[in-house]
Structures are given as structure tokens and as C-alpha cells.
Length: 114
Length: 114
Image 1 (tube, rainbow over the protein chains, first blue to last red):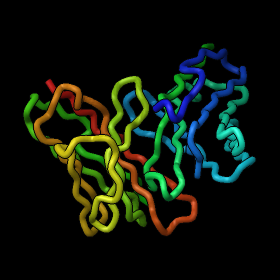
Image 2: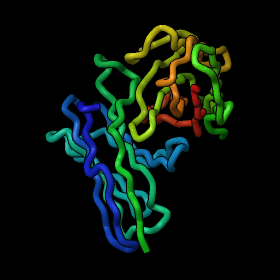
Image 3: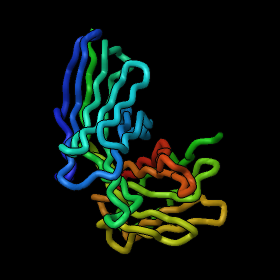
Image 4: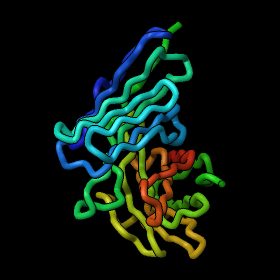
């Protein structure tokens, strides 16, 4: 959806290097979800951000929400082969705007090379 | 705690046929949403069910319909299948009682229309 833009579309990173994925919304965010997907499989929940300025970390993955910019970033430190996959951001809109519907970006494909 | 279970995992149908996909929600979840994910794209919201009624719908024609049962499981029915209906269909469950609006996704059903 153009209302939720992810960048880059794809990236190749050498094992051990860091990477950052961005997700920008043109509409008000009530919450922002990050999921990981292996090709053709279901979505694995990574984390959910709701408050402006919120930052969450899990293992080597950190996500931040900039409420003013309506933007979130996902940062992976010291990437490993297990980090390869498609990363999707999903926007939860305010209750007055399609409550309960997650609007997804097109995804960012991450390839980790030896 | 069981996750979201979808069946079947793969399905091949002929154009014009009808198909039913099934989803068992995660224990404790009372809301089910369905998404369609075409190849190379992010998931698109089809509809959501809560208390056995449709509670929000995306931009999909009426030939996409659903049901939710008293045990919160759900079905997605698609009539008069078209080639463009070929996609990964994802089911997600959530709880209106939870504070974090977490959405748990199943592994999906891969539908191929020939």
C-alpha cells in the first residue's frame, strides 16, 4: 500500500554487518507491528510499538517508533544467516479508521551472505 | 498455548470453482482476520470476524465470504474462483481483551487457481 512505504525493497548484507529497514506511514499510526516471513510461510511476530519514541529490543533486533514522522525503523546488529527473510511492517490505524485491520507494507527482502 | 492453525496447507482449484479455507484461532483469542498475500506483495486485509459477525472488510468482492464459529474458529469461502485469486491466504487471531492488540498469524494456505 502506498499509505505505508518500506525501504529498501531488498538488501544484501554480509554476515556480521548491521542493517536498517524503514517504514513510513502517510496516515496516523495507532500502532506499528514488525513481522518476519520466510518465503511462502506465515508471519512471525517480532515486536509491536505503540507509543511515540518507543524503542524495543529482542536479541539483536531493535525497533523504534518516531511518532512525529510517523516512521519506524528496524535495526539488526551483527546479522546472521538466521536473519534472512522478508521483513514486513504493519500499521494499526486509530479506532475510527478501519479498526482491527493491519495495513502492511510491501516488505523488505533481506539476504545475508557469508 | 496453541498457535493459529490453518488447513489445508496447499490447494489447487480450477477457475470457476469454490473453495473453503479453515482457521483455528490461538487459545484465548476471540477475533479472527483473513489476509490475502500475492507473490512479492504484503498481505492485504480481507475481513475480520468478532462474535461470529463480520467486523470490518477490505476491498474484496462479495464472492469472498466468511464465518466464525462459537469456538472462535473461522472459515474463508471464495466462490467463482479467478486466476488472480492465486495467493497465500493468512489467518490471524487476536483478543479484544488484551492490552497489546497482538496478532498471531498462521502458516497460511497456498491456493493455486488454474
